[in-house]
Amino acid sequence: MSGSDVHDMSYYKKCMMGGILSCGITHAIVCPLDIVKCRMQAMPGMYSGVGDGFRQIMKTEGPMGFSCGFIPTWIGYSFQGFGKFGFYEMFKDVFRGACGNDEKTIKKYQTLGFAVSSACAEIIADVFLCPWEALKVKMQTSEPGTFTTSTIKGINHINATEGMNGFYKGLQPLWARQIPYTIVKFVAFERIVQ
Image (cartoon, rainbow, N blue to C red):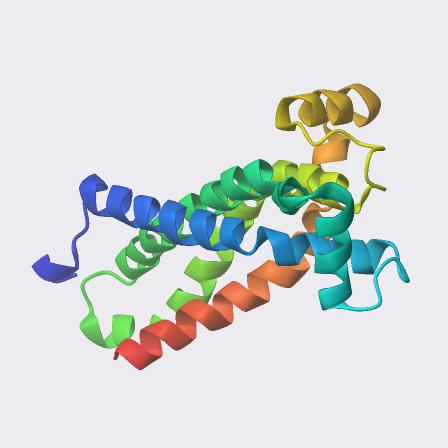
């Protein structure tokens, strides 16, 4: 590894903070669209389309109806970004270090290193995300008024009725979606930067 490739904890912290800001904020901003999408998937026929979903939510729940699941979305995707971006950089350094100081070997296996690093990081990131995603989906897909919209009450309810399994039963589908996506995202990013 050349001196410019050596990363310290302050670098990893910056990556983690960048992940928190980029994932948490962007997912929270699209929460209103996510509410309509989730309800359309869970309750076909509830809305005739996305526009109808927005109109019905505004009519029946008012502007606050668009905040359903906002807090778990913001927290969950902030945790996911923390893990995804921070651990990706750490794993890149670990796998680069496994190649020793041989620049030829590092170059030869670089793309594989990007792919494996991003997969490992996403596995961890989704463990952080999954409980919050479970809560968000439960809030957004329950018939309005049948499940709390309070984050704390929702956590307590899921824990009391389903235990830890209630927070992690969607982990495998989350991995099936997120790991391939993250591999493609980071490998493409690294190749484009090069």
